[in-house]
Image (tube, rainbow, N blue to C red):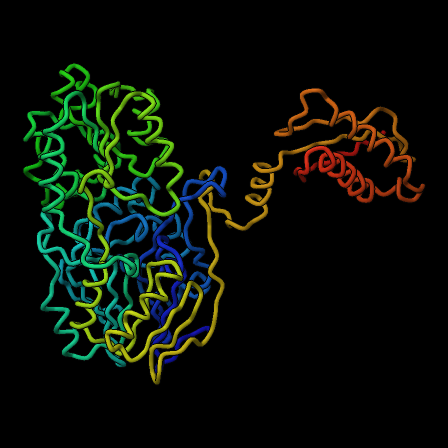
Length: 550
């Protein structure tokens, strides 16, 4: 379906549906497309050499002339982190509230796009039109400043796109959820609700930041030696809570990590955190007594270049953690990061550092709605259609069941690439489109399932072998084959010797016509090399063959 007609309203997720992260949502109507969010995800152990992945926007790139704008719901990486990478392919205006715009501009400066990407700031609660869509920003609460839902109004009715949210009566920074506006959307008659599914399996409510602040203060007071606290840099209410806990315990807070410093700067630029406690620069913190400092660190997810990892490995330029010190993880582990966080915490404990997580103390609350909050918003908005997003398939299926229990007449589970017609008529899946992944590889973007990363994965798991055959014009060997092995254990040289013998035997077995065909020799040599390695180690190495004719 190339162009959405004037008589239909379409929804398509290219990222963030069937997974947590990499959000990219599209609405189609009257020949135009609207994009909501453009985020990244983080690589796992199956993606060697890659730090960041993002949705492949090929579908909408082909239709970018009809893309009226990119609207960002908030400043989390999984909602705006791909703008700098993908905007050159899209070239559409960007709309965001002031804090998200401030965070984005810092990213655009780093990418050399500050004066290229048109970013329009929308005030909190602001209304604007990207024809044929009329939009309104609706204030929510989440684990970041200025989280917004969207009321997307069309001739078919209003779509309530929640973004990331929770109901926090005491968010500490920013306003509370605009409950009156949500009820007004319900009274007007909501066509559909496109809703966060992250915590659909969690009973009750997510909890309030105010409770975490009180618990952090008690926890910090009870420890001697240096204290380091790591949390999500974007959770500025939490960052402020940690700083205030330091002051209450007679300690000087130290911001450690560029991401934290950038977030605090962006918040202050927008009028938040103006009374943030004075921080000691990292370069001076080492001169203070151990019981008079508290490090606020990046790296809650085990990121290898973050501040907490440097402290755990003993290679931070200015700061140190030693036996008798304490490391507090005021965060949850994002699914997929369990190994990296486990390695980090083990490294800290090996240094004699006490590690405290949300399992040992009540020092974290989620930014996403638990079941009771989902039920409450369904009761307020009363949509005709529920489309779960922002979750794995199991989350989305459970969310759809919850919506039906809340008397929502229609539900659609639509993983990435599923084109849904919201109106007219009953909601239905009408098509499927490609929804691949791109990986940031150095300074470029490559397909996650492309040849370069496939070869890299083979190299990671199976090693590599290279063979050079020096032959004459008749295809007869004029020197023994040369073999090199990488990532293959051959300390005694037995495998290399077996490969040389196998290659010599392979050449001898070829017919005269085959010896004249370089492609045939290369393929036969590749098979001979793999046959030997598989016989010795059970592996299939990445294999290159070079032929030199003299």
